[in-house]
Image 1 (cartoon, rainbow, N blue to C red):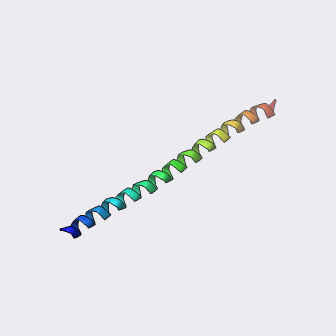
Image 2: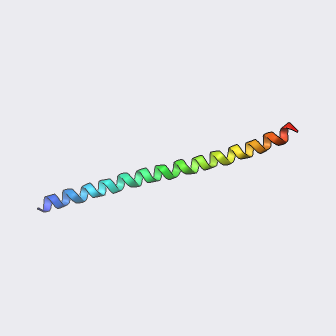
Image 3: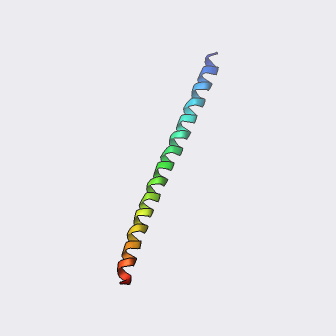
Length: 52
């Protein structure tokens, strides 16, 4: 019985660590996309002003 409980706990720990890793990667990706959007907006403004 104890072995089954340990297996269950290790399975739950594994799922949590997998989710944590996925969540961290997702957050990093979102931040990178936001920075890219900000950069492209700045670039658009610069292009508008440079044309004149």
